Length: 605
Image (cartoon, rainbow, N blue to C red):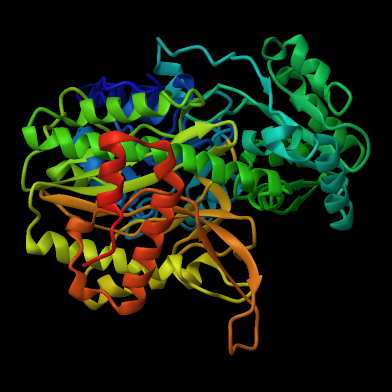
């Protein structure tokens, strides 16, 4: 199994551990310390050695930020995690707060005092984030102090060792473009921008550039490493030497210089001595890199990681792979839903059993490399916890008259998948059907959108919310995130959300996942992955428009649809989608599973 159902949160220990941290603050004459959910690479999923926020507070979500002062502490999470945070942390010791209504900066502005010295680990905080907090504290007469030793590490006595898993080549049959060509294109990008070099801190950028993969973090095939890319010569890869076996070395030795991570600081200082103009992405690079480079004499030029955009725009091979991966994955999920419809009404299926069954069916494909994240398997009220992670204590049976939300994904060599389906167990209520149909209308609005070149994700986000808004409802997460190619299930720069400022371009893959959550009762989310398609003319129109191709191939539960609420074009889209699913997945099923698919994909009555 690629997932565990053990309880990893330790809220009861949070009070004691925060007390240990406060003792360390006092010893170092500091008034506070910042603890992000982050490692040196700003990964979403962390190796155990970097799970400092979890160890300190008990919060196990994939995004969060804690501030611990002498007498107060706060944990900042987004709308996906508000319910989870309240359940996982000792709220009398650390107060959970939702962003953007509350921000670390606003909280510090209220609670920091003149002369306060707030410590932070400069390897864990980005340039942008530290600059924002510095401005807030300076206005209060306080200061942000970089520390050489992370204070959580100082009190975390049984901290695990960093991962040392082997790196693997990613075949050209899946990557589509040789690493040498990618490097050449990136060097031209840097040269055209007036840069001498770029420091790459995101492992997915390095993995994509060099056509390598690894296993250093859960569910994402990343080799933890750094790289320095110059406009001439071979890029330098800074990685633990034991991760590079002879077969990998043979593949990449002609295109890169392999160096130990202990040599990274010296390489940055060498750029400084050359007075090099070095690009750093202030949104993703740790503050430490800027401090070292500028301290050594380099000119730091803020700019996006040069790999982000070309990585996001999938090539023909990656697009073909994505279609294959989704067809394979869709068949496994359809088999699961057929099993669920047969077994769940008996009352013998619980959240863990369902998640295990789904993973097993994916594994039966013979192509599964990992899950792309821990399966969100939420029955009844647990479905209202947006990023719920079932454990043996919270495990709940699927009951008649309730909804079951399952959000899951897989990692295959040819693509990364992510799908959510909400399923009726027994007969749904009229309210459930109304809410589900409102979410479906928003989903269809995104799936059928046509838009001109330059359109950003934030321009499309309201389309998914409009039906809910008209009913006085909304959801507190983005409508969609970017997705990688056998890489991160959450990829930038593309996303469909209020914060999605990057233009959507052909080849980008996003999720389409509006939802609605009724706390204490049920959650609803419908998620497909969609591929931005090239501009095409519209009959009677004047301009070619981009659009979306839906990649995910799994039926949407018709039992939850209030058909009268759909417009004719919405019904037509759903019927056409189900016809696609039946044609693509049907040949991979037989017997009762095929009969289930045929029934699930008939036209709306």
